[in-house]
Image (cartoon, rainbow, N blue to C red; front, side, top):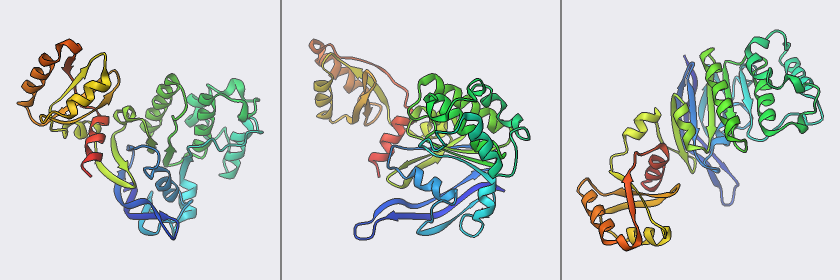
Length: 305
């Protein structure tokens, strides 16, 4: 049985000039899978999660979570899923322990009954159990929200941009926690605008403007990048980009860290790039080999749609 099945979901906002949030979205997530929705703000990730957690109705299409229809069986779904929205939504005036006890009570359980599931997470915030949730740091709020989403032992966990706005160390710790939860059999769907987090998922869907650009394992998506690519830099990066954009052997060029990534038309174009570098020695142009990443694939797919 699938953890999630989405079939031709459409959703728009507004009547006079509707804004399309989801445009014929379809995909499946297997039981026990850690599945990522990767895309920028406005791609439709939050709208999709709200539909799958029965908080929003789609205009058309259907979806099932844990075998239950999101419209007909919404009560059954709400008892089986955990949902951590992108914005911190716990009660800021309640303490850490009070928030957790409250959510346990809603699902007719106790902290003690499911403590084994949240132990590795909660133990990090337990020293602050008497602190009001609104006074916690970003990373601590994140851990508390995850604990509350897990306290009823859900079969499917939805996490909407859980690492946005937290420091790099907290991001790393959070993904380590997700992998441990996934190893316990919980199916996890996580959305993120951070392309580097795609490699931490079993499979990913790259989304933009309410459409899916590609679905596969991160490695298979990268393997599908079929053009040679190099990294180029010089002291004057803006002029370098302008010069490269005029060259016929260049398919695309865009900033990537301290370099520009140059996507070439074909393998023979590598020699043309070398000639370009030789012709611009006075501009101190340097180049090196570059391996495509998920971000490079996303840019290529986005420009081809």
